[in-house]
Image (cartoon, rainbow, N blue to C red):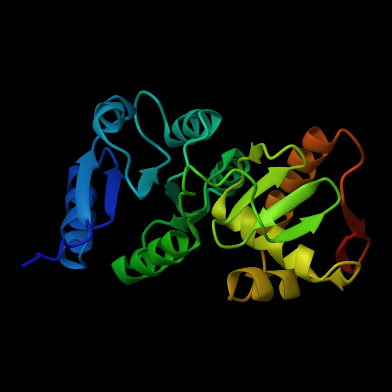
Length: 239
């Protein structure tokens, strides 16, 4: 008789220097079925990362020592693929923009409802790329120019089969563009198609992600980016 092996719970790391908030988030996410580990600083986070990799990290921006912006930039610089949801202080627009520019998948402003954090975290987890089997070298999927998108694995490759690391929300935008070539898409329409939610009135996150995609595609292809701005209307993808 064979025994079924339960799949492991998604593990979340919660990094915040406020003990009360850190413990509250840890308890709440644990009750929602996640395996949760908490850290009070970047140093404590590194100790956790030395042992294992989480599915996602809930990361505060303002912490003594190494702040959250430095941490997310360092993690993305090492091509870490876990999701990152950043916690920012109220009206701290600079931190939001910087966090997204460095590769965070989403952000939430303090104070916040735990249910909102859960919803955003689940959205990020749904978009995380699945690891590709080692035997698969050439991805299949959407091809454009010198690139190829693998929708199943949620990964981007250049013409030589080398992976270009992009965040989960960057992938959503690029896949949307690839499925709507040569169509002018407004910021609102892009947000609806890619992320399934309306764009906030002052939300510039789509523009930030498109700027990152432009840079990565141009660096990989060695020529002008495939994403063009149509003044007053939106963006067009021209492969």
